[in-house]
Image 1 (tube, one colour):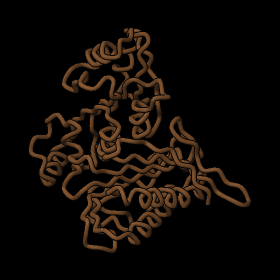
Image 2 (cartoon, helix red, strand yellow):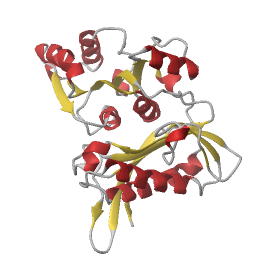
Image 3 (cartoon, rainbow, N blue to C red):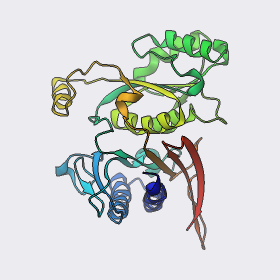
Image 4 (tube, rainbow, N blue to C red):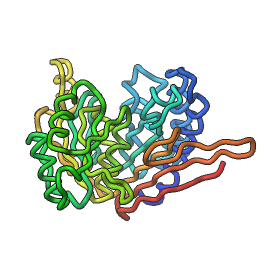
Length: 309
């Protein structure tokens, strides 16, 4: 897997450059198509057999990279691939922060096949590993994380998405003195910040997309952090979709070992617009500069890479 790391980096760089042309355009479909088409084209130059297990939709939603689509030129190795050609599409097309393109890969059969529905997630860095329990209340979790980090509650920093569904959790944490940092989009970035040494974020709590949860899990596991999740189907139809994908117990707690069952993984993300994690694409008459993070599971290492095109 390690030998493909720079290839996956190129995939996200070129997809981000394609999406960058649509920053501020307001044209969601055009931006998505540009990034997706480039990602597919790049993947189909590589010598492996990959299957999209988390993508942009079902087979009838092509030309998106659909779930079950085969990519690559070869027969071996066989890989599970999860993609998000633009994570943070709305801020990207509105010229705002937190737009990235991201891909993860691991050996076939090792990525959790997450249906496109809500998932509750708690993420911490390696110093707080073992202190979280998604079945417990948010207040119990912040107290346990603070204890693990030897911090007072008013020194703890938690990221949570600014959505009505989180209103009570935000209120409860602030009542304890916890520093709550609200974000609008992209819980992949929020998850990664908990595992970055130069970040002051101690925990991420969010009810957001399940596919993004699996993508984040690859990076978190590689960096030695901790994560728990639980699917939150909203209807009988969503429960049926879970069962069709082999998930019989929709209420089970999902650990990192469930979300990604291999140490041999690659995570690559390239910024389209600026964020707390990465600079956005910089462009002038003569060059374009991309900023990416490349995380490899076996090495347990994050590389921040600047590339000039």
